[in-house]
Length: 335
Length: 296
Image (tube, rainbow over all chains, first blue to last red; front, top):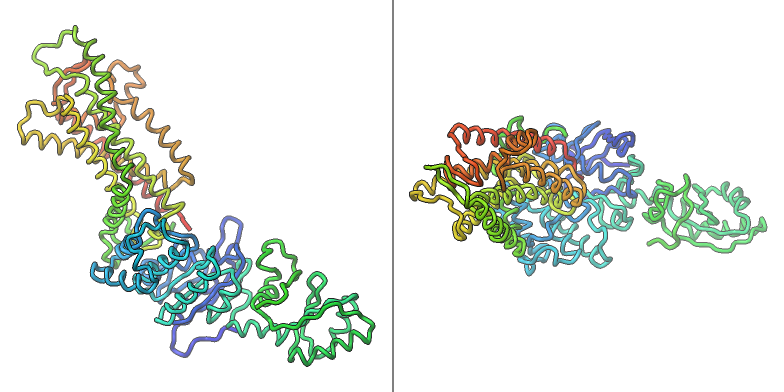
């Protein structure tokens, strides 16, 4: 599913057979992927899937145990220092000093990365403008709203003009409006040429923000591709049915050539169809009616990222951790 | 923790980088915080003066009255209790400030900048050194205030000294204070990076201050202590620091609280050396803890 980059174009992040174990727990279980220069790449997965562990290895906060990871042309195992100098990071939790001003946080970062005075002062002005915090430059961080703090962190991550910007759950805890605005900032930064690697457990974030997505669960990458490619793996349309005799309905519908796969969630039958659902639907209804099966509800929709996620991980991200092996619930409607 | 690009020696700067002054950045930031919290700043400066003003004067008036009848050996410079204990107060203040100087590390780890710093190209030894230097600066300011205030309320520091001798005296005191402060700041940093909660840290620190402060010659002579306690006190860095302060502030030979204090230059050199060894050991401890620390 992953398309290799154009010939001669080395990936900006290359990970091969990465494994990481805490005690007996394998948090990352042999993942491999490549991120192309200039793209927005997402790790989509529930909490505890291994996203943060993987990102922490890439940003050199965790020592690599097994496998290989190259970031911005440098191996994290042998040249962590170079990796550090080439990347920007926005951590999952707010990592700001409440008692420093907006300007001081950026100045501190510039100094940490040994930027020359003139360069870092100019850069601070540029970034304050970019994230619209110019008026807040002398404000203590504790007086900023959640969205402003996030913007400040993004500005900080960009201070050194990094080749790659890592964003670990960039919009966690933000209100919907602020999230939209954060996406705009992130897209803007990406348009300027910064490659973006982000982790998220929000479907819409992965769907709307990323060029390519890897769904990760239990430390493994389950599937990768563009949002469109992932959705296409579920067929063209999804049909949700509720009947008075699901078992019988399934045995009948299984044999229809247009039906690609059937799954059951509670009382719902979910059909993945290869053709235009509106054309398949009448045939399905006829088949069931002829067999004397009563249809109590019917719903036709395009596969959403939620459907993709539920299909491949076997769980709804909202009930994470307790899902049975097969999907049990699919929210109707989607996006 | 694998190599973070730190060379195997204390000398700084990761390979292939001109990151020689990372500790200055850490220092700069810690000093910003120091002057930002006005109440904390003022109380940290006022507290030692208050110790001196209340405890010092109260005890001095009692001890001096008790000692009044006792004969002072002829030809020995005798000093009052206030002068005697002022040296102890400098040491006590340095101890407290230094032991609590590492707390910022714990706060950074739990709620602040630690990940930002650890993920930067700055070496971990720079974090330790930066925090330690800002702690030393704070201790210098406090020591100078106590000396000034002490002289003001009657401590006979630098009595009869020529200006040059006073300068040397102050520099000598600051050198001792610096070494002692470094040692405890390193210790504090080592504990802070290893602990999870500020409450736990507070507990450990309080537990440490008690014996260090009281098993020393800060407030009274140690000569008449039971043998074990006396030996402990003798090797207590606190005692070494106070010996140095008294040597430089009062003189090599004086009489106080019914005891004759005489320091040879060798004694003072040994105390100084003791403090050097102490702070080197504490640095190694801190460095080891920092290298092992994983903050994600």
